Image (cartoon, rainbow, N blue to C red; front, side, top):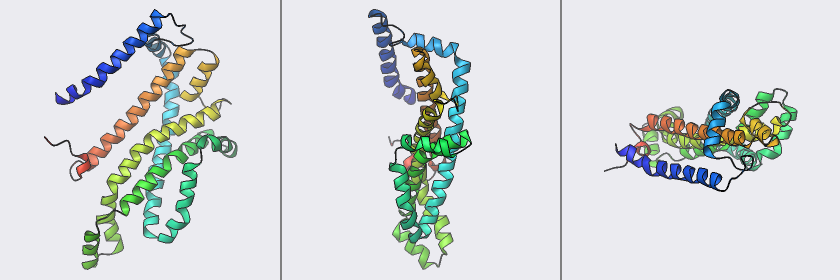
Length: 260
């Protein structure tokens, strides 16, 4: 019951904003090719559901592949760097360079260099999603309690035992936090890559539908595609947040509910 009450204020505010939007569009007789109302957007989403949801599936496949690669690659590289200070000094600057380089600037090159269109789009999204997992996991691996580390050394624990039973559990909340960030970034990277590739018709993801709708002045469909993208981003964050709470709820304070 309390959870339902907590959701009422944002829900009421959202419904009020939609009602005001619809009333303004109708009252000022705004053309639908300039700004469609929420009801027209919903009608367009229902009418073009097959087309739009098919494009959404393409975008979600790219996002999921990039996020999985970021999770495995970022965590694996962080573990390797945590074991070797020299490796960290050698590779981490390049990870930072890849993060700060705008993906929209390098996406055209990747599209040209990589023959497989799907792999090229995944690589573009991976560039955006990789660094948060890497940086957060490294921070977690370095955050192990020093007193516990001394205790492990006192009992002659091997480096592998210290890594498995101390450093990895300490890094898990950091890794999951980075994964939640990367989920949204992977979707953004996929959309940016589709904008680049979609102009040539290489893929038919939602970004391509947005471009197509803009060129044809089908603005209600454009808003419907944007709505699906927003819903997909929210669903990805909610799923990763639920995964984090499930993995951490029995032993870590970050997954505990508010104290009453």
